[in-house]
Length: 500
Image (cartoon, rainbow, N blue to C red; front, side, top):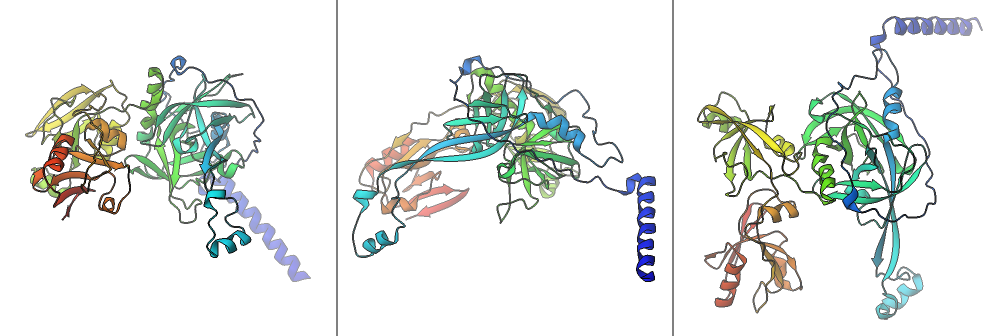
């Protein structure tokens, strides 16, 4: 009994000593993660009529002039100041879509399986199309007092009904105002607003460094607003995305990734995981990449129009730097230019060092920054030509459609029968999400199915038919009408494929 009493006494003494040390040396303890969960139940509200897209106004999506002061003071053990600031701007999004399926509802019935195994064919009787309603959930961020919300495109893809639920329980119908399929982003417009909204403060993703702490807020698994914390694990992943180890799960898509000042730096987008749940490898769309989509509101919405420079660049490697006579790798080198490019002063071989005063580290940085400029906005470049630094400026434009696409379905007694082709142009490449500055004829698909079509893949580029180089749809048709196809060369994923 005395031994137990002595042990208890020691535990009390050690606990008091530890507490005293923790209070005296506050920097010795790290801030604990704070989890805030609030159940939000969707209400039954009637669907309102959609507002005209012509009446939409675009909020300003520029970094706040405020410094984004760290809201977590030294020695504090809670992220609640950040959560209180940001939570009213993060919303839950519920969507419905109608899908038509043709599979029979009796297909898995044991008795039906017995009949089918004996040769009975009930397809004509039971394989009738029927409609099912699919529901999905996600998150979004309010960026404008007039009801503008950012989310992921896959959250509301093909939706026939969209509801936005605020942190205070209010529910509004919403419509899709702008689509940006290239980066999986959508701009929603809430309808028939009642009461005030709290737009989030915009931060600067380029000010973030690897190791900086971040907070992710969303609606994982539909359980309600949830907060997780982590750090910036990497920047400029997959063409500019922010990588974080803050837990992002199903339902977090479209939610906010904020800095320690409570400013929006990214829209949570996807994870890499074998299990489908967070493995600490999540990715967010930098908020400055959303600027073209928000700017598109001024033009009445629709599909986003990204600026185009007409330049094809390559990262300068140590080997290339040595070839160019550089002491160390710096900037990107221009590999090709389009004849109708807006950056007319840029030439092949120029080195691009800076864009709007910020260093260009590699081609990913170049295209990532370029993606943040809406059509018509000016860009300042610092370039080096023959060891002389030059500053130039140009305004990005819509990708040009030169030559015209001339979409055609090839017909005839040949291997290309039923293949759909078109002339490549910067505009078509942009629509298809292709990179580069290719020329020639691209295969878009097929309208009939036959064994010969297995030779082709979507987005193959027809380079040569027999011994004829083809640069247009007319060239292909001319060869097919005059000769029997004996061989061809295709460009597939940058590699030449020869078929005989």
